[in-house]
Image (cartoon, rainbow, N blue to C red; front, top):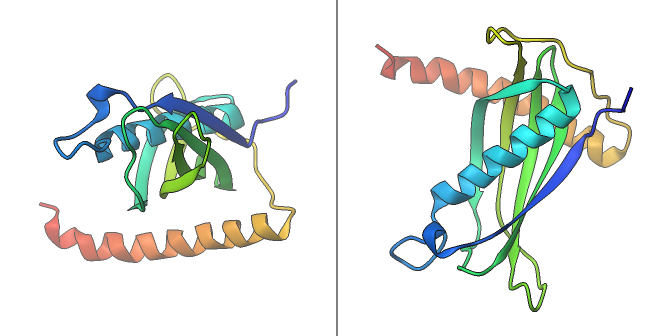
Length: 158
């Protein structure tokens, strides 16, 4: 049996159809790339089909220009019974210079599901390095914060 893959990097070229009226890549195009990388990372870890349960904390730091080489790095930072918290970082550069700069980061939660859409158990990830332990602890704190935010948001749900 192959070991689960904890991280992955997907690469894209920012194409003209990805650009908005301001000449920069649409935030929606970046979010699509993030979702694709989160899925690939979650499926690689779990060995299962996965669905997006949450995407948050999306921070657009710098614009991406058409023609840029875009790298979306995704890595598991926490696992539940069927869920995986994936930290994502987007970097872009001119492919001729390869001067990378961070453009976006966020957290996505993916859930492994069976053919009927029911959650399935996944392998558990345990942090080993200090950096992993810090990211794992942050994921736990963010879960607690999201729960509080969810309670506050109920006023908007009919």
